[in-house]
Image 1 (cartoon, one colour):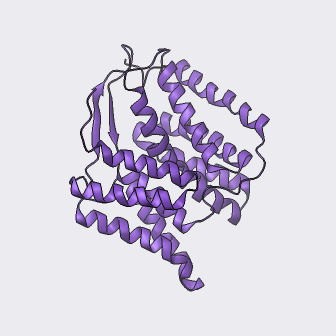
Image 2 (cartoon, rainbow, N blue to C red):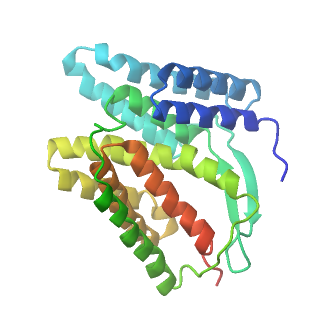
Length: 276
């Protein structure tokens, strides 16, 4: 599989995300700047979209210096900006299609994969606005964390029982591209919003249980385009990701659990769904 030269944009973005999650702030920021400049020069990003991206990042970076009465409104604007990026509602992005209606296996439905530029950028603004986004840290509760594999495995088996999936063991030739995209450009941004931002804020305002359940429900609603069955499964998976965040105190662990669930789906079952 040949890749275009502008794959460099997403390589820089993935590197920036990885360094940021590892708390290497300066190196991550440098790669992000290079990514945005490369996207502009290669016409994957318009000047208007770049201005909205930099404006959102600047607001997120500067809101801590605003007088206290103005900070909630500024954070609300950052959250709206992040949601617009994740829902592809900001014009001027030309996301790269790298797979077009390919078959993971003979029993799978066709699968198309885009490398998104807009959605992953939400992570950086959310982190600037909420500096505790990566989690409080602390001791990891390994035993209950490992037990989360049981309900997640149960979800895949339930999808099989309902006919949405069929067993199909093996990896396609493009598995590595799926893995890098899913881990650093999809799971990272989704977990930043739903666990790092929403679950933590709701837990502070109400209770940890309310934060977990509401954030998981919203995560399910975000998958509404896939139908009501996917909404329910995503919400239940979201509970497991939220528990992983609580049990570890680390957003990176929730991202890893989310990614491993998706990768197990790819490796063991029809992806994205079983053909009828």
